[in-house]
Image (cartoon, rainbow, N blue to C red; front, side, top):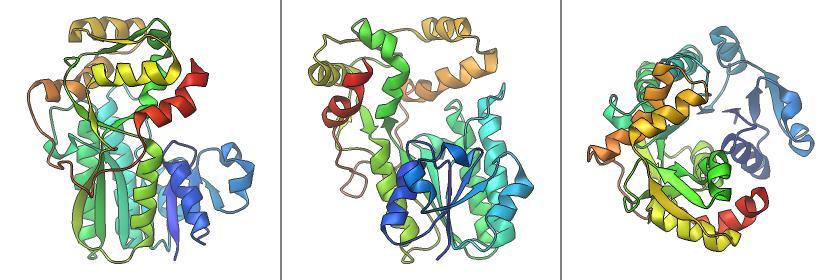
Length: 293
């Protein structure tokens, strides 16, 4: 079967591509710069230079695909949600034009609300576009609505070195935390399987829900540092983001990614044996975060 993988140098896409090669598949991987692929992977995949922002190039690169792993890459747009939706439209065009039978989309908890979740709204719009595209030929679409990536902690290294883990959420607010590699495991399994149809979603939630207070304790033990959780206001976050050079809409889309949780909205994909994946934050932090700090 022909399986196409986008963002093959990302945390999830790289895992998907590697697992497919181990399963005996030579996937087609779309990368803006195929030279960034690890050398040992490059010789086991069909690498295609493709900018996902180029709709015609995406359609050409996915011709003949049986299955597609689609990720909306960040665009740097002043309106991040609109940027994700624009990328999603290109993926949907490829699904429609090439009549792709199975599409696995890397989405997020909160996308099901379609609005009010910051830049996640762009993923919600992509879900709709992929569903509409697949419906025309009876294709199947699976949305992986994932929890909070462990790798987000790489963007907080300065704070962690100072002994603090900050969030706009109350420090005791629990949410799913997940290793992106485990998301890749789920995605690869579904891409290889022909035994599903229609439109569906699946949460990918890691082994347990954690509050930021829980995460601070885990990270502290795993890295040998004292780390405490601290809630900051949305306005304080806005000030930090503006100081980093983000525009007003970019700031609001980042803030909005947690504001829907503060409003008490609950994701549709609840925790179950199907959504629970194995890698703990402690194991991930010991392997990846300790050396980074």
